[in-house]
Structure formats: structure tokens, C-alpha cells
Amino acid sequence: VAPVPPQAPMLNFKQVSVSSGDAIVVPEGYVAEAFVPWGTPLVKGAPAWKPDGSNTGADQALQMGDNHDGMHYFPIGGTNSSEGLLVMNHEYINPEYFFAYEPGQTDVFGTWTLDKVRKAQHAHGVSVVHIKKDAAGKWQLVVGSAYNRRIHGNTPMLMTGPAAGHALLKTSADPFGSYAFGTLNNCGNGYTPWGSYITCEENFNGYFGTTVSGASQTALMKRYGLSSGRSGYRWEDFDNRFDWSKEPNESNRFGWIVEIDPFDPTSTPKKRTALGRFKHENAAYAIAADGRVVVYMGDDQAGEFVYKFVSDGKYDAANPTAPTNRNLLESGKLYVARFSDGTTKGDSMGTGEWLLLDKEANASLKADSTLPDQASVLINARQAGTVAGATPMDRPEWVSVHPTTKEVYLTLTNNSGRSTTDDANPRTSNVYGQIIRWRETGGDAAALTFEWDHFVLAGNPSATPLKSAGSSNINAGNTFNSPDGLAFDHDGRLWIQTDGSAANTGNYAGQGNNQMLVADPKTREIRRFLVGPSGCEITGITFTPDMKTLFINVQHPGELGSHPNRPTIPTGTSADVYTLQNPLVFSKWPDANGGRPRSATVIITKADGGKIGS
Ligand code: FEO
Ligand code: CA
Ligand code: CA
Image 1 (cartoon, rainbow, N blue to C red):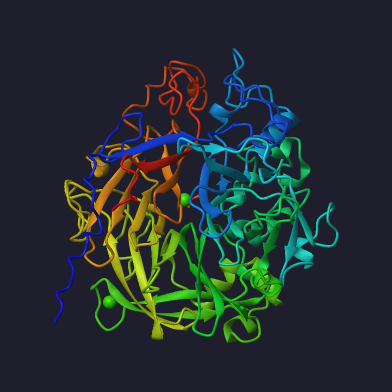
Image 2 (image 1 turned 90 degrees about the vertical axis):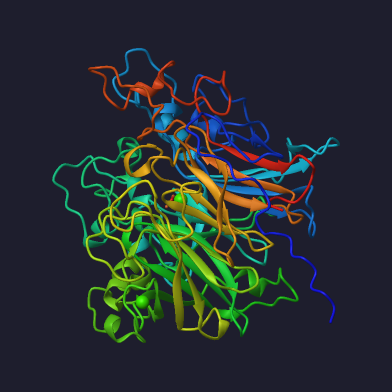
């Protein structure tokens, strides 16, 4: 019998310590460099970024957007690891860092103008960035490339699928309910085997408010959390489509999965209504046993649900860019998950089923007169999930599918307000979050039942409340809170990114800034790989095919919130104005002399040119 060759360890790097500093920390032997920060000139004719924040709305439409989030690397030509399209989301803006400072201003908006509204809208959406390694092996933005593109909050796009044309999608600008303007709050992402990029619209509700006092909201607006008065972004002051009392259906045109062809800069993005409307986090695909395409999706709010879409058509793997493949997200079945405790209570495992959200085939939905047709079911997916009997979860964030076992992993980031428990969501006042995983029956992504268990309950061994220490794979060395971004690499390592408290005290003592960890799915070992600068979250993750470059995003460095380095707000100063001026800015990452913090991509390589994590 031939000896079994020794297996290289899955996690072959030295864990980094927690940090509360204003810098990126990576393991020994690794290099991390900031790339394409907010405002970088991208599209032909784009002006330079102005550190004083005085770029206009027109400038912003040609520059990198803000709050870099989900991201995917598309090789140009097969498996090219030296040239590709880096496509990324821009989730939102931080007004305290986004506009030029005006002496004496009394809030973060300053003199409020239509151009500032447009600038904010243009900083949302997606960037398609053509990148290439130079002769020295350093990644560069390909200046002037025809691939470079900005898609933003005013870019025309098509409404497609079963809800397109429905009365709930019609507005004064679009009496047909068939074309929308822009994409917003682009959080996590997905990609497809036929080469398209998926951007996921999350907290769209935050952009809608009303200047009309006493206006009343529909049940639909309330379920998705539209502000009953003014919005935090104040776009309704100059743009009626964000005033829900003036354009009551405009908000129904957000909260969708949007599919983009990054290789065709003239292509029109498509909102895919067959995948349901909710606060989409990301979208992870799998191919079912019979060739149908399955897309797993979370709805990031406390007590909301996990969904999966199963296409009607089958994926033609022999001909990836076939027109039939490109339209697979046009029609299919939408399911929502019910997680059951299984035979034993309290054992961090159980069973589950996928409940079909179909107006005719689901008896509960058929009997519900508030959802009169299938388009209403998709537009009101949350309510449909409640009617169907889905399990309220601890904020479903990113989903990722293991490259070989097809086991599905999902982050449940936290739910401090949880008062009752079930096995899948086992802690009240859950400030740390957990990662749950499931195995579809028969290993078929289209199956209607599954078994689940917890991969990790995040926690803190130095905090004492019941179960807060987390599961056995959490220790004083790798403690973290609020898992959010999640992705398997090509070799099956599980990368975990956090967006939680950086207070580093109390429940969060010893956890430092937001971070990225790596796990071995077999042994369940977790090691910290990276710590981010002050006030940021770590999000977005993609690799080159050769696994020698890792791209991540540092989102909103310096953002308000609890952080030990946050300056004390001077007495009498409103909390929302203090970040505008130096020296009160408590992060300057990535340019120490840049004057204000900026979201940016981070390129991580191994100094010896080896594979990441190996
Ligand atoms: Fe945009 Fe749930 O994070
Ligand atoms: Ca159980
Ligand atoms: Ca997120």
C-alpha cells in the first residue's frame, strides 16, 4: 500500500493579534496595499479627487464610488491572474466625510443643494475597474480602458421577471413599471458561471422619506422600514422620487438582485424580480443535480429570513455564454427557509425545509387576500415569508457554498434584541452572532429539505454571560463578534469578515477593530488573518484564479460608533458634526496626509509570491 502523502495544513500562517490602531495588520510574510479609494478617477475624462471634498456630482459619476463592499474578480480571457475586471459595490456614503467643509456649518450636510444630492447618488452603485499587473508585477488601474464603468443611483436599468410591469412598480417617470433608475445600498454581491456580476440592494429604505407632514404609510412601506418622516440622506428635499408621499411606488423598485454584464460597458443592468424583494445581503449560486441554477440569499434584518431561488431553465455548462444561460435569473421558484430543532433540543443542529413562495401552489399564500398575485408575493417577499411560516433569524448576511462538498454556510451577524430562542438562533441578546451551515438532502441544491448545524457561535471567553464564550472553536486568541462577509476560496478555506463593535471593552474586550479570519471547515479551527484600521468594517472578498492575489475592501474607515480611539466630542457640539475637521477625524486611512478617511480596496499578496493562506 502506497503511503498517503502528508497533507499541507489548511491554515499555514501565523495568526495576527487584535489591534485598535489606524492601520491594516496582516500576517508575517504578507503585504497589504490600498487600491482605488473613493474618488479615484475611473471613467475617461474623470477629474482628480479633491481632498477638500469639493468634487461635484458630475465629477463623482466618473470616479470610484464610496463605501466599497461586495466585489468579484473576472479574469480577462480564461484563467488570467494578471489582468481582469475588478467589479465592486459602493454601498452608501458617510456625509460627515463626503462633502466639503463649510466654516460654521451646523450639521454634516452644510448648505444643502441638488448637486450634493446628485453627488451622493453617484457615489452609490457599482464600479467596473479594468486592472492589470505592470512589468514589476504590481496591480495597476488601466487608465482610459473602455471597460471602466460607473453604474450609480441614476443609471437606467430594466425591471425584469414576474413583477415587471406590475401596478406596484409604476411611477410618474415610468408608467410601465418596466425600467428603473439606479441601484442603491449595494451591499454584498454574487457572480454567475456565465460571467455576470450580481449586485444586491440592501437598506434601500434609508433613502426614502417625506417632506409632507401627516402623510401615512402603507403596510408594505412599514414592513421594509421606510422613515415616517425625513430620511437620513435628505434626497427628498430635491428629488421627488425619494419622497414616498409623492412617489409611493418608487421604493418598490429597490430591494432587488441586479444582474450586470461587466464585459459589455453598454449593457443595461437588469433587476431580477424573480429572486424576491428584501434587504439583500449577497447571492451565492450552486448548480442543482438536474442543471438548474440555485441562488442562496439572506435578508439582513433582525428576525428576517433566508431564501433560495431555483431557476426554471438549466445551465448549459458546455456553452457558458449561451443566451439561455444569460437569462436564467428571469424565471424560477422562490423558497424561504424554515429551520427546525430536529430530534434533540439545544444541540446546535436540526433539520429544515424550503417553503415555496408561490401564490397558487402555497395554500397559505393562496388564502391570503393581501397578496393578490405572484408579483405581489415577490414585491412583498417578507410578508409572504411570514405567511408561509419561515423562521425569523439573527440577521442573515453572507452565504457561501463550499467548492466541493456543496455545503452552504451563512453568517447570522447578531441580534441583540432577540428575546426567544430556537436551536438555529440559540441565544437571547445575541451580540456576537454565529455561522450556520446546511447540507441539502441528497447533496442536491434544489432539494426541499436539509440538515443543519452551527459551524461557530462567536463569543468572548473573557465575558461572562450565559453562552457568551461561544462554541469550542472560539478562544482568547481568535475571539471576534458579528461575522458578516463570508467566502470560500478555491481550496476550500472559509474566510470570515466582521462588521461589529470595535469598542474593545465590555462584551467586546480583547476583540479590537473589525477583522478577517480564516477557518478550516473540517477541523473548525479559526485563525485571525487581518485587522482593519479605525472605525472600518472589512467586507468584499475575491481571489485571482492562481490564489496569489486576494482583494478585500475596507469600508468606512473613521465611521462614528464605539471605538477606543474615537475623540471625545467637545461639549456643546452635535455628535454629527465633529468629524469634519482635523484633528477630530480619528482615522486618516489610507492616506495619512489625505485629510479625510476613504473606503478603499486592499490588495494582499505573499511577499514570496506564494498562494494566499498556504
Ligand atoms: Fe450591508 Fe448587511 O451589510
Ligand atoms: Ca436540535
Ligand atoms: Ca455586510
